[in-house]
Length: 286
Image (cartoon, rainbow, N blue to C red; front, side, top):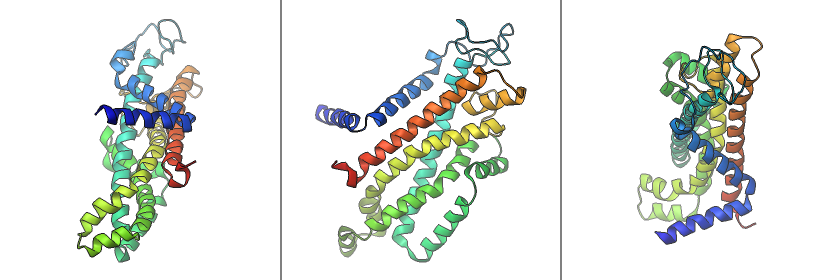
């Protein structure tokens, strides 16, 4: 166990030296996850508490990032909203990318008519803009955090199919796959033991890169009023609620939630790029 722990630390240090920007982005994301996960510890106030004496109050010593039009602390709502936004994005990406990866591997292995029909279905789903498709699904399924997760997952699914399928198509032509088939291995065993593990790197990079997109979709849905239902705070409905109250909102109600979204999405994108370069065999030896 100590040797394994040392190997993990060595790998992380090597990654940090080779990809310092990605490592910094990973540290920022880790801090965001810790603060959001321990929201009850870090949030200075109850996110739903209304201070009628401080409606729309500017940043001050009592409320560091100010209050909204209902007298609720912006900092506390950003911290608690981060928990909701991260939960929705992570679960939706895991669900969509995982189902898409299984679909892609199966489609590549079976080929023939199944592969053709699968790819036509994927193209139909990809023809819809992600935000529009998520909105249509939410209207059909109704509100709630799990329906938001499912709606966003559907928008991520075709990308998982396309990316993992392309990797699986090249892997299934390798010699050891033919050897396993010649030895009488079942299709399930070939997929599970010989093809799927070789697609894992592509899956990790895809999932990491799509976490940022999922946060943007969740924020957009909340902004449009069809995402997470208030008063539960999320970064999207914090911005949407501001616009709904006034045409020209006070600056701290827009800047701080928008900054939280921007930093998180940028960190996910930078980490995804670093992981892609680290896991790419063509770049691994450089």
